Image 1: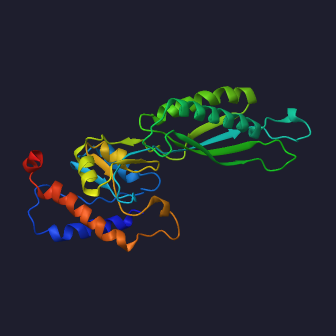
Image 2: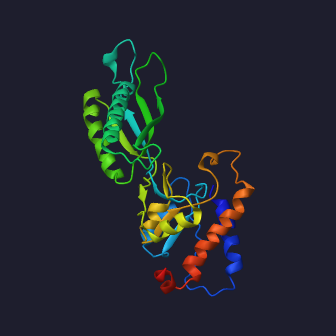
Image 3: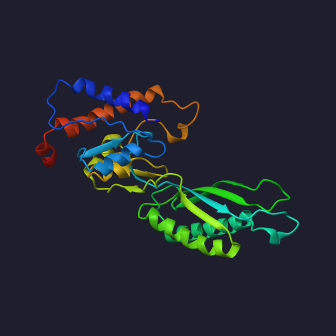
Length: 281
């Protein structure tokens, strides 16, 4: 859902190459954008400034996005003691311990949804989805191992590490109660929530050029990492997220020219116009 944006960005800049650029233009490709975001993380860790403004070409229907939720994908493993099911005293059920773990996670979800709310999102609360569970190997055997993977989407203003600490605080008493070992950790590092100020120059410009007010989405992007480098950051690209990650993923031909025209206007504003001319506007 991102590759088409490169071709459109290149097409947007081609007719401008013979004009005197007042500021540099960078078309940036990063690795592993769909999962670990390792490329964007490495850029943020290097702390080298990229530029004044960054546009990330995720599919937004050419509507500017200035907020998105974070993405945390986590795993809990429970190691109990297997034994013959005819005598429960022979073992410690990892599956029954996981049942209580899921109850605590649902309790935290309810607590966080009471405490945090942002009406700019279509789903205004943080979400926690219990995605998949695996455990046990036979009906007549006490379950010795169980694993749960879940997805947590925090709102801007929620700290992923604080959320993890709250979860850890619920797991320790359950490990003691059920006499099991509980291991908890991320499947990959969390993508932080993202928010660009509504009055930022890039947000105001994108709203004017597109005719749409800046919005919020539930999916994660590399925006928080590029923002860490001091760039005003916005998510804005052709296509629809509902079409992404599918065998029939595509970009309608009718979206190409409007995207090229919009990117060209952004390039002209930031790269071809002198900074003092921008300030006078």
